[in-house]
Amino acid sequence: MDKLDSHTSDARPVLEGPDIARVLTRIAHEIVERAKGADDVVLLGIPTRGVFLAQRLAAKLEQITDRKIPVGSLDITMYRDDLRMHPPRALARTEIPGDGIDGKLVVLVDDVLFSGRTIRAALDALNDIGRPRAVQLAVLVDRGHRELPIRADYVGKNLPTSLRETVKVQLAEEDGRDTVLLGVKQTQ
Image 1 (spheres, helix red, strand yellow):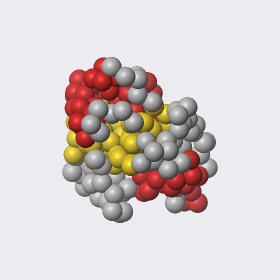
Image 2: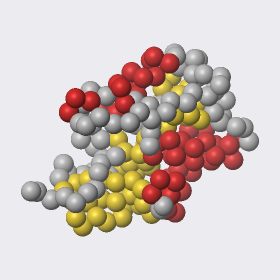
Image 3: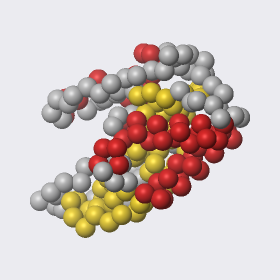
């Protein structure tokens, strides 16, 4: 997720609460269709907002399949390739469902797909935890500008952006409201 801060202005919403709910429902149906029922699906959210999105997707998958879908979180902090370029950050929690991930279809869930580096770090972290049968990626927003050959299997909204633009996802669990904001970085 990009940061909107004092150097960003004119943020405008591109998705609101009902839009986010609708795209998560669509993604849930796509997962069931592609996974042929979601029998062995495990959802792992990438902190922070990816965890909340994974929990929402799990609830929607349970409504569709009448089965409880294992959901957890995958902290990637120590796997990032930019640790030395940013101030130290607190570690988030990695929570793997009790049955683990070995032999399962793991769907990584994140809010914004940008360069692909976060997902590369998630794949490295996943490799240290177990050996899934397959790994897929679900994102709320794909804004383009990939630096690595990574693409999402499930996308809520493709949002072509310029490098001067920022995308901020706000979710009720963390921010008090559901919205996706598009802003422009101000030059200093």
